[in-house]
Amino acid sequence: MWLYVVAALLGLLLLRRWHRERQTVPRLSEKHVLITGCDSGFGNLLARQLDARGMRVLAACLTDAGAEQLRAATSERLQTVLLDVTCSKSIADVTAWVRQRVGDQGTMGLMPL
Image 1 (spheres, helix red, strand yellow):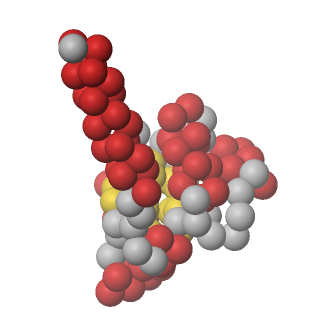
Image 2 (image 1 turned 30 degrees about the horizontal axis):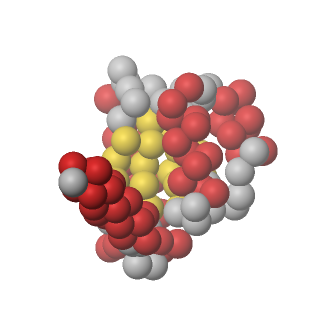
């Protein structure tokens, strides 16, 4: 009897997982996300994956070399900008740059890494 209960629970878990994986964000290609720390590591990987899924990625890098490498590996939807998070002027400049790119739509997310 307990085998039937375990099988039913397993079936419900699989059904829930299938349902969650089918859910999508409407008009994903119109969404913007700002990611900092995109030179390497997790920020770089996240920027590449979101670009591959069709999102408009605004990738902030610390170095020119990191920005060039990321641009070369992604589509035209991904745009890079140089950002030094320890410099107030750099943050203000990037804020203005982001507002110019996204307009009234705003960003879907901010990933400070």
